[in-house]
Amino acid sequence: MKLGIDFGTSFSLPAAVYMDSQVVLLPSGKYGIPSVFYYNDWEGVLVGEEAEDAGQGDEAKNLKREVKLELGSSFTADGRTFSAREIVGYILAKVVDTALTIAKTKLIEEPLEGVVISVPAAFEHNEKEFIRAAAEIPREEGGPGLTVLGFIKEPVAAALAYFQASLEDNTKVLVYDLGGGTCDVAVVEARSDVKEKYVVLESDMLRIGGKDWDGRLETYILRELEKQTGSVLSTNKAFKEKAKRAAISAKHAFSEKTGDHYRDKVTAKVEVNGRLYRIQITKTLFDELTGELLNETIQMTKRLVEKESCSGVKRLVCVGGSSNMPQVLAGLAGAFPEMEIQIFEPEKSIACGAAIYAQSCDIVSDIAAYSYGIRCYQDYDKDPVKKIIVNLIKKGDRLPKTGEYNFSTIEDDMGTSSFKVFESAVTEDECAPEAVPAEHILEVVLDLPEGTPKGTSVTAKMTLTTDGLIEVIADDKNGHISKGRKKLNF
Image (cartoon, rainbow, N blue to C red; front, side):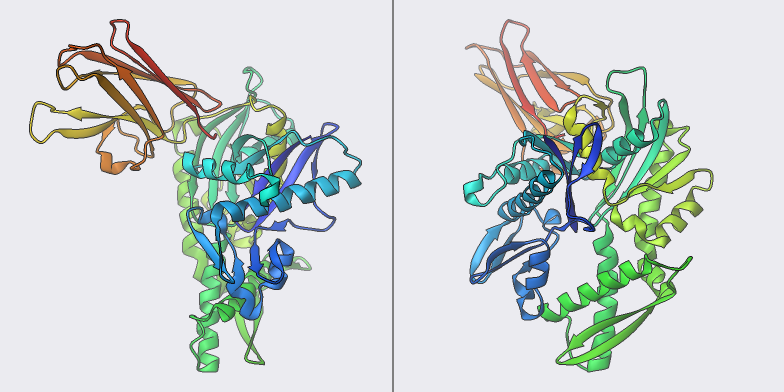
């Protein structure tokens, strides 16, 4: 059995393909597994609903949410510090254990071969590498001990699930995925004339999601509570957690229908020092507080569909739990009146698409999510020497892609020539080193013979394949060649 895992900011869920059907492996009636971590020195580590239940009141200080958005941070609870890698590992272990338990109830007895994990459309290589490392933490260390077969962009995974359901070839769809922490968009085409079957035409991402809607409501609720109580509550972890839970509950309430209509108002209830306070929130106020967030996601979507490669898109598919908010559908309908807009299995489509991809990771043809460049020196005969990055593969290039550039040695008898590869969002041919991350992702060192003169030409050829293998070949045309390759986490 190969699992697809939607590792979400707020919720995570697993799915598998069994007897040619996608099966979500969750207990009956469950939305997902909360991506929440809790620890105290008495109960130990708790994950999911158990963590939610334990982390209330004063225990909120031991509760960690939204770790997916803070992969470089650590968290201390009851005097013990956990790295984000450990926390992600605990969450993924909970997801897999749940999946295997439910699989047995469905008489799926196949051993687990590996997993595909969905990630936001523009997650960087180091972020995916981080998640891979967390997934591979051994069982004896509290991790899931998984074999990661690959990664898939969240909106692309949703598109795979959609096409499996609609069975339409030669059709383009725009997927709008508003999740807990990011909004991801992608235009994907189902093709009957290529071996990959599904072609990603464009994709993009904003680090805006349902947690930002929660944050706006939480701030409002805390402000109103402070007016009613006359106390400062916004610096108290316990009261902030109460306000957050009330905000999440209110957001969900606005997404539920009463009869044929959505609610016009919701009452948020928060207990403070033994007294229950009520804050009324109207839908108009909710939309005013969060309208700016929705507009940012719509503007990103407009920029995407205005690209030439996306012409002819007539269908917009909404996924992600936050797409259930009625303001989302209304906003998209107003922005794209010419499109057919539909909500497609917002909670489970990404996990199901990841499960489909896990069966065969060569069914998707993608574009480069980032640019890949080599640092070199310009005007090296002047003082000071100017460093630049030359991008051989640029963000948006159709994969596989090969680029090359001719460099020159800058000293007599250099001995070695180093080619460091940097990943960035810069789309220009050249840029300053300050415009890219400081850490390189690959280095190729070419050994040059003794006496090599200054100005010797060296060619660097870079290739990036559809499945994420980047290779750099350095060649001085005199028989001296060096290669370096690395599997990027697509």
